[in-house]
Every structure is written in structure tokens, then in C-alpha cells.
Length: 493
Image (cartoon, rainbow, N blue to C red; front, side, top):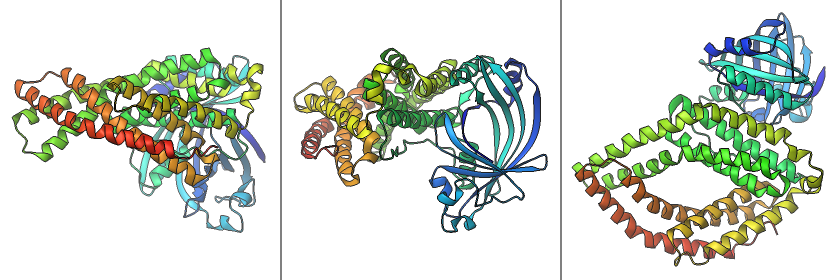
């Protein structure tokens, strides 16, 4: 029986590359095991909603019940030997998670069958278990393939885990994944298709420190980047490209918001790579917006030759831009960014800086109040005369509105729900109007970059003219939205 925290990294890896990973790893004795794991939950998915996975794994006639919960590099893990195929509701923290006999409702949800090749290696003064998994998850008559590499720290410093990951990634592409086998099984059981992942609310418990709040929010954003990169590589869905870009910008903003407790040089290096990643998606996103505007124009009036040719030119450029974004999330640079960002969040020098201890240990509510005040002041300075300033100035106001919203949503769970929702709602209204104005401003250079026929160019000029007519209305609504935001009480005070 055990209760501990596992320290583990998980990577997606093509099945054909698994042997290359093993060949590049430090030497050690290999063991091959056939594993069958049955995952359990209640009919109303209580465990899934609480971020808990529960399985009974059978290997070589021995059965072990395992419960995991938490996120980040170190997750809580409880293992117990059991006699049968069903979990024992008395073991570990199950009684507190499913009290009053609720565990009686546990049912098999899905199962995972795989071949695991594992090796205990030494690297950088640490003992690390390398596991290469190949198999499938089955649920509701549906099947999904599994091809993964896991690195689990058995002893030594966590930095060694990341160093080994970087070495193995040079031998074969390893894509950092924050989704467990349990999460994949849950999605398969629900019949959920592979689709873009939007940001999820970060729940910060009472008493959270500033450092804990940063790590929870940064992990959340990295998970969103990783999940959307999977969708981009597998399907090229435009919305996944947009959501990855959102997540990269969100993480950059979060790093800036928490700047007072972070090592500046390390933070700047990660932000620079996140800026690169978001920029690789800019063209695809701008063309997505333009494609929507062209589609709207075609529904409002009979589509002529010019509009048809414009739509085709936009679609061609959009495919090329999406392919470029997909190439970026297949690249070594992307994989290195994901490993480096995770290593910095979990083991960076900022965690050991004595000068920053007081800020790191400060209650997140107090840190939030100062950070949100600072963000709000910057926005007020830029948004006071939205009807008089240039497009560039309104663009700067839009960026500050977005940063304030990211910060407000980061700390939302620490403050009264209604007041927070009211403030964020008004901020969102302002952001939407400023976003519409930015779309108008960027449409012209995007169209100028296309190879258009004379008829398509004429349709483009007509589209720009119609958008320009809408500009004044967007400015008026943006002014009113800012005035409404000014009247909104600061939920953090």
C-alpha cells in the first residue's frame, strides 16, 4: 500500500519511432509487460469531474488499484494490491472522494490494453524509469491507438528528467502531452471527436499563494497549447490553430502578470518563444476572419464572379497559412519550447530565489489586487479617447483589454462569482468591439497580400468599403463599452 507523488513526463510518439527512443536512451535492463487496466467511474462521472482517475491494472496475474489526482509535474498517487477486478472502496482517499456509500455506484468506464517496455536508467545523477507504451484504449465499441513514452523520476533532481527528455527528442520527435490515458478514455467513452480545446476555468483553492496561482494557470495554458497542437497535426482544424494562438498569447500575458515573482531573464526567453509560436498562426487566423467576411457577403447578395474568385483566393491562401502553422507545431523548435516552458514552470530558478520568497508566498488574493489594479490603470490610460485615436492606438487598447481579461479570469475563482462575472462580461464587450475594429484594420493588408484577378480585386474593394462603413458603429459601441466598464465595481477590492 502506498500514497505518494509521482513525478512524470508523458510524450506522444509515432509507433515507428519508439524503437529509436529506446536505442537512444541510456543503457539498462529492459522488461516487457502486457498490461490491462480497467478504469472506473460513477454513472454521473463524479471522479472525472473531480480530476480523479481510478483503475485496476492486471499484469502477470497480479492486480493493483491505483488512484491519481492533481496536475503538473507531481501528481498524487495511491496504489494498493487488490484481489479482484473491481476497486475496493475502502482504500486510499476513495472514502473521502465518494462518501456515504457513493462508491457502490462505481462501474467500468473503459479499458486500456498495452505492451509496455520499460527500463530503469541513470541520467544526470538521477534514477529514471523509461516506459514505452503501445496499445489501445477501448470504450463503448470505439477504439483509439496509444503510442507514448513516459519518463518517471524515481530518485534525484527533476531537472534530470527534462534533460533526458531533450536528448530523446533529438533521436525521435516527442510531443509533450498533459492528457492522461484516463482523459483519453473518458473522451472516447463520451464519443467526443478530436476538436479544438478552449481555455478551461482555473480553480484556485482558498489560501493559494501567488506562486501556486501562477503554476496552476501556466499549466492550464500549456495543456491548451499541447491539446490544440495534437488537433492541428492530426486534422488541421482552423479553430485549433486559433485556440493554440489564444493559449500562447494567454500564457505570455500570464507570465507578464506574475512578473514580480519570476526570474526576468528566464521569463523573457520563454515569452520570446511563445511570441514566435503565436506569430506562426497569425496569417491563418487573419485569413479565417477574412473568409468569414467573404462568406457573409456571399449570403447577403448574389455571388458574382468577383466574389467567387475572391473566396477561392482566400481559401487557397488560408490552406497555405494553416499548413505553415501545422509545420510549426511539428517542429523541433515547438517541442523544445514545450519541454523548456514546463521545466521552467516546475523547476525554474524563480522557485529558489531568496529575494523573491515573500512575493511567491504572498496570498494570491493580495497579489491579484495589485496586479489587477496595475492592468486596469494601463487600460484606462489607453481607452479614454477611443473615438479620437488612431487604429494603432485602439489596437494597443485591445491588447491591454485582453491582458486585463486574462488576469481577471486567472483570479476569478478567488472572488465573489457575480461581481467577477459582471466585470469580465463588460470587459469582454469592450474587447469584442476592439477586436472587430482590429479585423477591419487588418483586412486591407491581408487582401493586398493575395494574388487576385481583376474581378476578385474589385470584390475586395467593395468588401473593404462595406467594412469601413461599419467602423464608426464599432467605435461608438467601444466607447460605450469602456464607459460601462468604468462603472463596474472592482471585484478584487
